[in-house]
Length: 103
Image 1 (tube, rainbow, N blue to C red):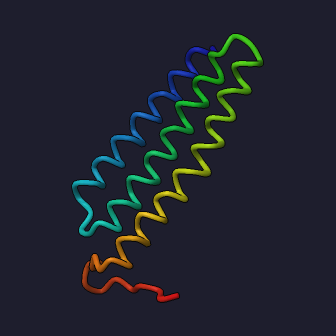
Image 2: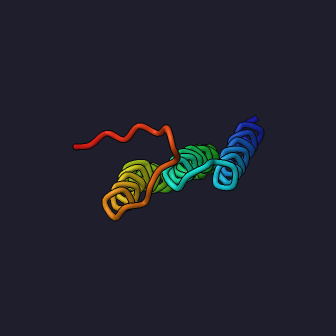
């Protein structure tokens, strides 16, 4: 039963990564693409981590996996934001009609 749940998590990760990659090709500007990939990657890694947690044989390995998932969930959105902010500061224009909040 646990193997089935882990496989469902891995399939969810594949779908998440695939949709993020599709967004990379279909979305109009770099900021939308970055947003789509950031969400797809973060969700996909969460699903992979959950599947690995279900399959891990001991608690030490589970703690290590949870630390890795936590670090990825903190670092990935932060770096995505910093990359988008850097692009905006250096003059990369978003698509027409996109509202940009000036700080």
